[in-house]
Picture (cartoon, rainbow, N blue to C red):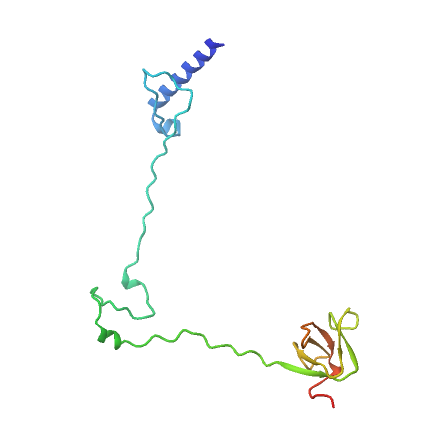
Length: 172
């Protein structure tokens, strides 16, 4: 057993020595440093050194090819402009967006004694709430459609009800 191990280690050492002498193109892998002849063969593998890869280069465009939307305080020859020259430059357009107006809230009054609020726009959908005579509801869809999507004021429940039970003026 010991003899077989020694023969195996000697064979490995010879293979490493001969592989180190071959050009890299024949072996297809980078060279590995061989152990010195006087040193015993180590049982731990030696690290493989990778060939150095060149660092990527960064190519910058010249300042004359980069478009700028605002004037720069630097002149073409690289000097800073004075305050008077900067004050004479046109102002940049205001980039703040116009505030978007909220759509008007459409409210209607319930004109029937009691009306079901449903999960969908038909009587085939389940009842999720109920509104009573003179309750105020907020219209969330087309107010002229046969069924309208509503939000019940105060409860916040959203659903559908038949538009024929709604009117624009408070019932009297």
